[in-house]
Image (cartoon, rainbow, N blue to C red; front, side, top):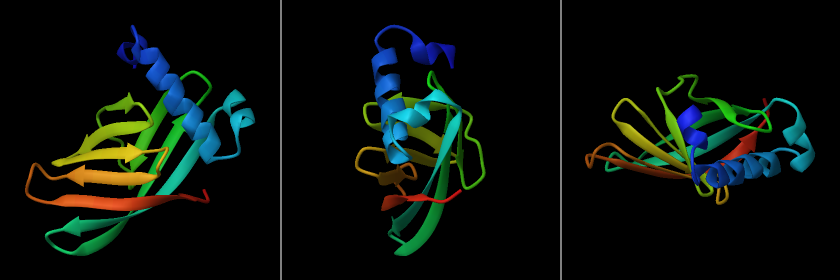
Length: 121
């Protein structure tokens, strides 16, 4: 986590944290530890199946402390302008918090795309 805030990456992290605040109740939420739960309906190709994925992000006003997808905490994650990138097993996942979109790739074997909505919880 310390590597995340070195050099010019701090601005990216702040942008991501700002987006998390607007996904919930606004900038005032950033003062205390908070979390947001996203429900993402992801269509996977070539199988043509749709799965609902749950994304939970826990943060305070300085950093994201925890990311979970379907209850599983990935080994690591990176903040990018507007979102977060991570991986679970062979699935590389990018979540655009500004556009509320999910994109994933199974190392060229399959892809997933979907929309995310804020879920209670």
